[in-house]
Image (cartoon, rainbow, N blue to C red; front, side):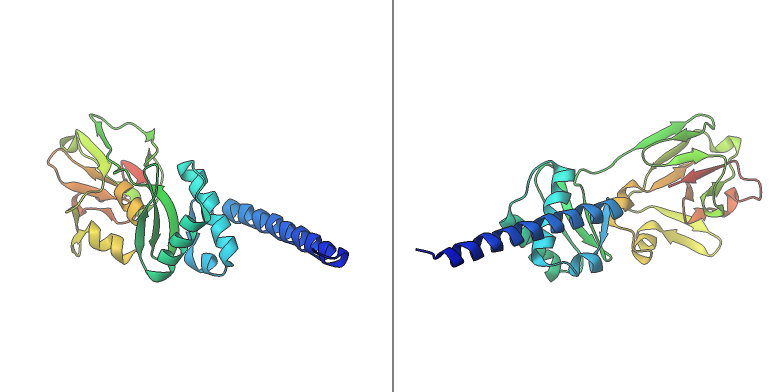
Length: 219
């Protein structure tokens, strides 16, 4: 049987624990406001074990819609610590990804999209924007013989011919440390001959470069 002093100390400890938990939850909410989709690994590693669990539970709930248990979160933390790059399958068709110093929870489903344009028309999709302004590496000059053009997601084996030679997208993605999920969504423009004529952030091929571009594909 506990003494009055022991009971008082136990209650005090519980209140302090609850206060700590409340502060940690507020910290997690603040962190997710700052990093809503992708979390830097170095930020994650500075957290305490309990903070990591709280953060993962919130991230998983926000993306997958279920509340992960402490054991599941602890196992995920072990895997994140053990591997430099790793993808871990979760419930509800999502995965936890650690790639190039970034942690993200994203869809497992493969992203496939293809927009066929018989003529130029500006548009704003969930994957890209086709606009009349942008950067030089997003610009392309189109000719009548290019139509119909297709704007689709990047795929295995894609490459573009540039002034200094052919550039494989897979190599560029690696060099630029683009996360895998983002690679699957990256747009490329293809002309009627099946040639990739523009990859945003890389640029267009030589035949479609000019000082007066027709449009810009903004990632």
